[in-house]
Image 1 (cartoon, rainbow, N blue to C red):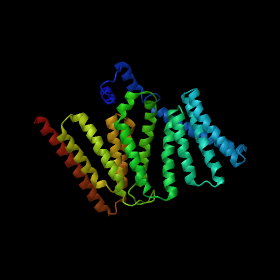
Image 2: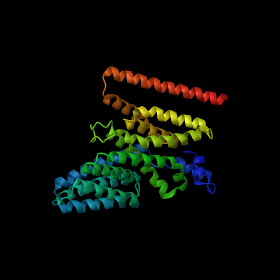
Image 3: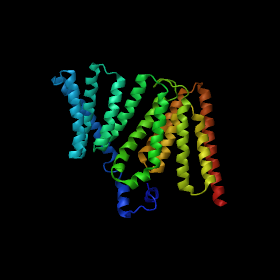
Image 4: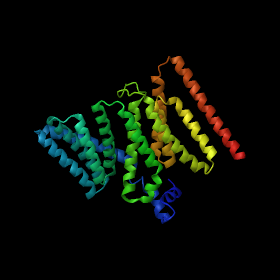
Length: 350
């Protein structure tokens, strides 16, 4: 994300110091490297598993009420520890306490007649409270993922198959809005910027996972919803907006060229409307390119061959027909690419 985008998003009256703003942009996503945060999460999970096993073996938890009380205390401690000292070691310990607390609360609620739907709603409330109260970015990331996982669990418990379309539409809208307005968050700074980074990363993962569950709508992973192509519509709209923003940055006021890029991209993704995950991975890739977010770019780039392979595998055709279809699709992509390159040269020379 460039300083020019941040200043333009903040408005003409935005007063800033170039040196401090550049430092904010440089360090906004690098307070701790992603590898360290992933190791912190892995360490928290392993610690949580070991500690939970100790609690069960030792017999400390001998009734249902003790599960609830102990789990609640652990959750509260996980929120307070980062406030006291926010280091990587304390971050790992707080993640372990958070996971153990959630597991104990889930176990403690079951004997009281709570169904999976009730527990999912409870976990969604807990995740929102954690986001508001904690000072640990890793906990915010886990809590946002927990919120969307609870939403999926609630949809599964109610048996509402079409709810997956609503889930995918919500995550696509949130991811696109957040990443297209990233400059505004960077200009705002403070708590908004601090929350923005882990929330954005969690939303990207939730969006990607939602389309993995949808697949080709054959019910192999998730109960097959009617009309799989419904999830393609919000992705197509988001693609239109992203290409509009990207082409505006590249081509300035050349509306004709922007229109050509948008139409070409929508035409390329239209044949995969019955498998919206392909267009969704392309959306994540473009959002990562626009916002300068390498993790999103890599997720989108890895998702494209993954979903194309799944789409190829799920096609109700013979191997020969699949091969012909893939050759024609590749030829269409190459012709579109050559057409755009030719038109771009023509516009530059003209």
